[in-house]
Image (cartoon, rainbow, N blue to C red; front, side, top):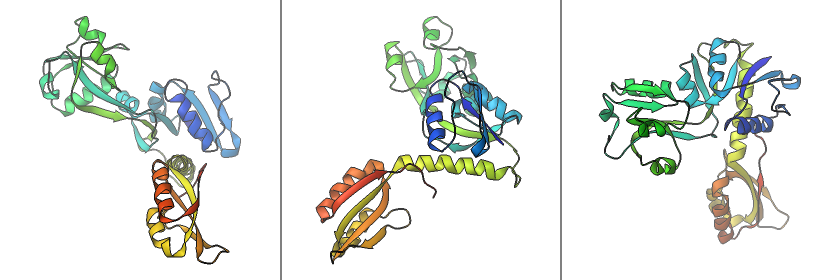
Length: 285
């Protein structure tokens, strides 16, 4: 039975549970549940603190886990990313009072406050910068005001809270994070173990594709088919079927959901009619 770690709270928890549910897996009904078994899919889920998941997976006690790329790197655990999941995205940046620094090279001899000591220390070492790193559990922007550090490193979305604190972002991003699937480095990849992991990954990949594409159906004149197909090439190629009315064909193809409205406009201008889009709930490519 495949043993999988899932975040039990925070910004990772809800989206992870939604994705697993869409992938056909049984999920807990109450937040107090710390372990459930999905016998039909031969999976056992363990609901753990997001920061601890990489440690459990690296120990080999659990086969794979869902956590944040930031938490994996910060932990220093012997685990690796095997699939990005596209949610809980965040960017880590340096910030300080205006005029303090223009880039990471200016941080030699300074003290940097952060909740992600492992990430920042690794980044500074990679850049050859000799700076002290102070670990704080939250509200790191206060560290500068209270004289604990000259610089902070934190998750940045709009930067509004930093500007309100009189700080400015500088330098390149330290890293970009998102939810990921991880497994232990050197994990069992035998024929008995690997199929279960690959099946799990295929299901999640199917959810990612289903969220990204819609199915588009439309009718068009046969003489306009080549131009229509150029707008909707599909993945391999679209499905074409003749209609009862001579000279007309029905077309079906997957199209990116973000471009669906523009494609519908272009098809209509080309003379296509009965243009429909439907959601895709699951797929295998």
